[in-house]
Amino acid sequence: MILILNDKADPSSAEYGRLMAALRLFPGIEVRVHRIEGELRAVTEVYLIGDTKQLSIDQMRALPCVEHVVRVSEEYRILGRHKDDNRPSYFEYQGLRFGQDTLHVFAGLCAVDTPQHVELMCRALEENGQTCTRMGAYKPRTSPYSFQGHGSACLGYVFDTAGRHGIKIIAMEVTHESHVDEIREALRRTGSPTGVMLQIGTRNTQNFELLKAVGRQQEFPVLFKRGFGITLDESLNAAEYLASEGNSKVVFGLRGMKTNMGDPHRNFVDFAHVPAVKRLTRMPVCVDPSHSVGSRARGSDGILDLMHVTAQAIAAGANMVLIDFHPDPATALVDGPQALHLREFAHFLEDVGIAREAYLRRLEAAKRHQAA
Ligand code: PEP
Ligand code: MN
Picture 1 (cartoon, rainbow, N blue to C red):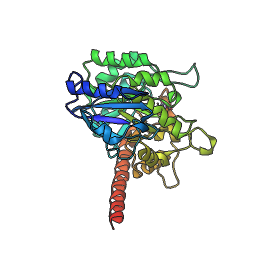
Picture 2 (cartoon, rainbow, N blue to C red):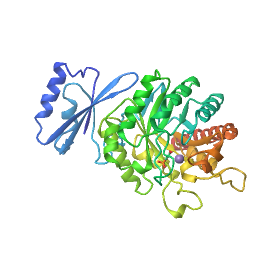
Picture 3 (cartoon, protein in one colour):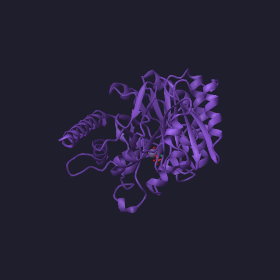
Picture 4 (cartoon, helix red, strand yellow):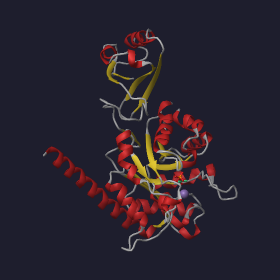
């Protein structure tokens, strides 16, 4: 059960003290308080864990400081959707809103290689009116002998360059909790010219200690990639680890499943799960066409598979697209074969716009027919 507290819920107030004292009287109920910092205001939520069947909604609503009560089903307590649940399904970061009704494109380098390529990428983003990007500094690789990213050594010039080109958020994977400190420190050193959305990669989906560490901080939102070899339910439960530690600014990322049933694509494209994740949880949903399709294969109609699957996801309501671009894919150190050329950026964005318009028209038609 979740108690959402009102604005008067100041931990030093007598009312708040009375609430906590009242909650202590219920046997076998563990009380966990989460303060969720929004850009406009902070909200305090109290999670009651244990046998909450003994508690009634009316009884809880009558307690001091309580504004709203949600009885949650067992699954995905915080990130899930529950009956009578009108908690917000969006968060704000760097002045941008991430919700189940918004759309953001994060085009950029799979892996940072040279300062020149970062500069060319950021220039293309600015020229195309984009304020978000992806830049991999810490790369988990299949072979220990492959390039694993420049790590903290590149953070300074990546943040500086991004800031100069008006980039507000960089999605960046972390594979160890120490990387979060390195990112925070590099941002401090460079005067925070941009923001960072921490990415949990598919290989770390169930790295619970990493999830708990990233969940304990609320400074950076998280792009959480589904596990490529586990069920959707297992991945959603893993995402809940972030929220259970206090960080519910989580975007859920679909990136394809590892099975040869998806051949000839690198992974089986799982974008039909966009509406499913939006139904089961309150998370905005991201799709990663690059790591799903994995190549620049082109359909018989002349359109790249990458652009077809992106359009399919957006037409079904996806909220974010993470996509690999590179100024010179032939020399990219990671995932060159799936990267789009900068000269394809304008076409890609136009296609995104067409698909988004299709989604908005589909929504409008659905509302009209439901009302009739
Ligand atoms: C990535 O986005 O660079 C990446 C490695 O993705 P995934 O974890 O989905 O493979
Ligand atoms: Mn990659």
